[in-house]
Length: 491
Ligand code: ZN
Image 1 (cartoon, rainbow, N blue to C red):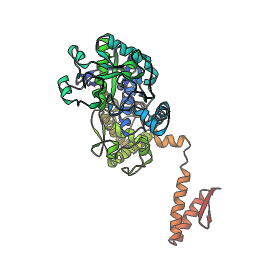
Image 2: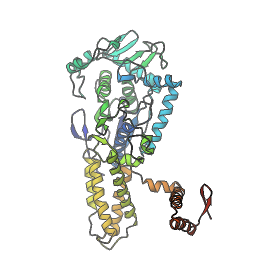
Image 3: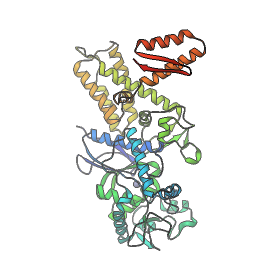
Image 4: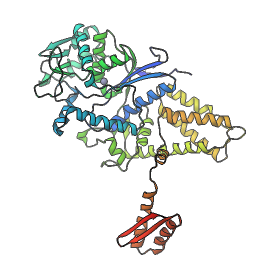
């Protein structure tokens, strides 16, 4: 099997041929959610993007160890080194244990990911479960001379680091730009310089989430968990590090600095970032009133939503854009995705019912090679979808007798379509899944017909009212009129 493909490396700013450190194996680390709120539209994009990469790597025959963390400690408000821990704040407001908050939202995140058909990573480590590893990592940076202690907290010494390495290599910044762009906050506290960042923070007396360390009772800085946990599970060098573009600075920049300071080199060979989702052209944010959770999308309960959208519509919507392009949410765009997905799934169904002819008038290798080339070119999922749409047209032509397909070609076509639609793109036929799970489609339809019958009766349209009752009786559904409406039962 051909395992060659290229991927855009944010670090080198170009597409590179992917060469794994160990033949046949891939280690991949992706920054997961901070679990203090409901999973939202912004979570869907990195989850689907790296699920696509995970599925694709496996479809090429790689054994993949995919690590995606859960941040349940150390992520302070404003992403800076000051302010309250996001989870502790939620816990205080709702009078819960911080771990209750983290557990609750981790479960909600998992449920939403299941709905989106995002596969479980190989390992999902929690930051709070790796405090010892983080303390050890901080010690290595101290020993290497790139950190200092100040009043029980440990800070990364950006200037010392930058004298030897380049701080800002990932986001294309230089320390000079960072100096001019960093506000000297009043809360700078014990740091020597505003751009230094915390590796370990001494806990204030009211801070609940705290652990003992050689320096103070405290907690790790947010960036530390990813350096410590990626090293623990993937080693000092691994293949791919991923996340959303919003994490590039400061989070990933700090991760690179931490790993390089402790190990002498960056850990990841390829840095991969997905672009963001905007809503009607604007960045999503609670203050802008356009913050939409995944549950709201699935139920349609949000003032910006014209209707509910199924999880597969959301997944298809994300896959229809290249992961490095911007993706703008709007009802029109999601309705178009819903129609597109429906067309694709109908094509898959038609394909399953085709009967072969003695020979073929179509070249099924076209679809296989177009999909393979698109995926191998930096995960070009929109090109895969467009090739599949071309073939939905051809499948319909075969069904209508305008084209012919041989038995061998039909088997090959079914295998290619199934591979890309279900295995690589990770789509699921929601209607078939609903039917298989015994979803009741009958009751809502009967209720709907009886509603129409009530309206007809109110309008004294006896003909329509009788016709609905008689039609239902004919298929074994007995309608019983009551004073304030009607009931129905199966005969
Ligand atoms: Zn991270």
